[in-house]
Picture 1 (cartoon, rainbow, N blue to C red):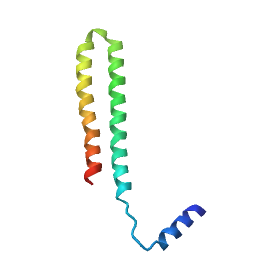
Picture 2 (picture 1 turned 90 degrees about the horizontal axis):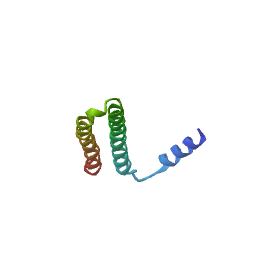
Picture 3 (picture 1 turned 45 degrees about the vertical axis):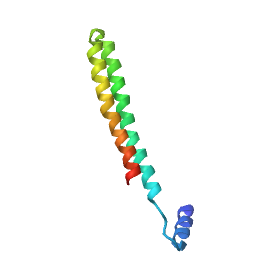
Picture 4 (picture 1 turned 90 degrees about the vertical axis):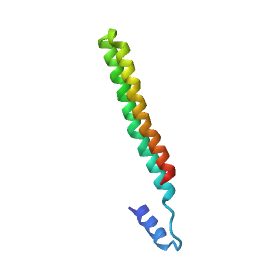
Length: 86
């Protein structure tokens, strides 16, 4: 708590405004990367599980897996672009 009080005191004494845009951009890109990262892990994990359960459906599963991967990866790219726009 003492550290927070010291930081608050320093910020209160600052005469020029603090630019928080770089922090916001970093947060946008970081949060935009977390979701697709989790989604890609789930997609590939479930595809491996499906192929292990039913090996003869491998072609259909991998095709669907790559389509899902491309859609989820597009979300990460949108977040990357938004980090530059905002």
